Image (tube, rainbow, N blue to C red):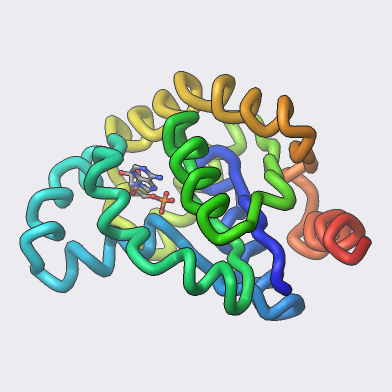
Length: 189
Ligand code: AMP
């Protein structure tokens, strides 16, 4: 059975990059919450219209809305396992995920913090903004909001997984290959 892995870190820590490498090697389904929210907005659905302003401002959408995006994760978790990227971001979301997994006799196997310094995050976001891409990378206030959300929420979220003894911290400032090698070492156990 596939594992349930969470990749966490500041914006531009490399979450999606590493999640995709994990997907490729281990066949886990990649659940990118930011991607799903952007796709929902792009679709023009009612939910998409409701969350647009919040995402555009770099703030967190409500748990009620997040639950709608999560709809079929239990089936997917049973089938392939999941690597989550961008979810959970809050301790209540972590508890929600635990409950959903418990219903299908699963649990989180590992929570990985890709640790980078805030100044490195800002630098990388700046580079990403220059090479096109996401609107939430281009506005300084929005970037500050996203860094602030992390500052406020990360401690209680990480404590949740530390208590469960599922917490792993990796130096996210190393190269993509080095970071993945470190992750791989733990996943191949
Ligand atoms: P990301 O692509 O992971 O940087 O996420 C982009 C934006 O989507 C965030 O700045 C939030 O506005 C929203 N978002 C992503 N994940 C979550 C989450 N777990 N809970 C609430 N909002 C989220």
